[in-house]
Length: 178
Figure 1: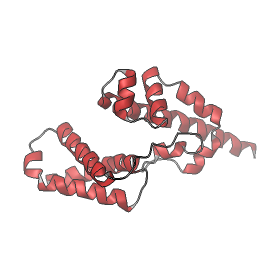
Figure 2 (figure 1 turned 120 degrees about the vertical axis):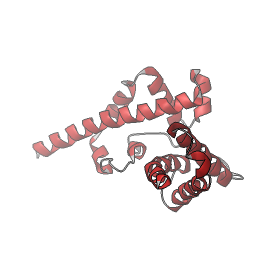
Figure 3 (figure 1 turned 90 degrees about the vertical axis):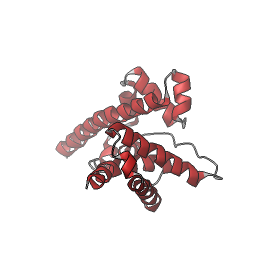
């Protein structure tokens, strides 16, 4: 049953990456993640002997490769710019607050939260919001693409925590003023 535990543990991570790659939820992501997990099952005899970080890296590489295979022949679309109106899409996780919570934020608060990030996290977040891929961001900032991915991860989590606290405070204040 070791494979089943592995698959259950990594499915949410793969779904989050897939949603970011595909820009959608739904059947396309479900199918892609299931395809990757099936490939892992078929290769489990080899994978089970690898350390956990290598297994996870293998899953992400296969997911990315399968995604690219599906996109062959289609023109790539840059990621949409992140604004106050769509900031909630960065934080769509099982424990994420409801989208209406983000209505309590102002554009100025969003900009303030982004500008409060450490330089590498802020710059990486801004370049990704402009639609640049990890490799291009890495070239501009002099860092490997894997580091860019790590910086984006930390930037999103810091922003999520900071913006959530701001939004909850404004929502609570609005509730008291009624």
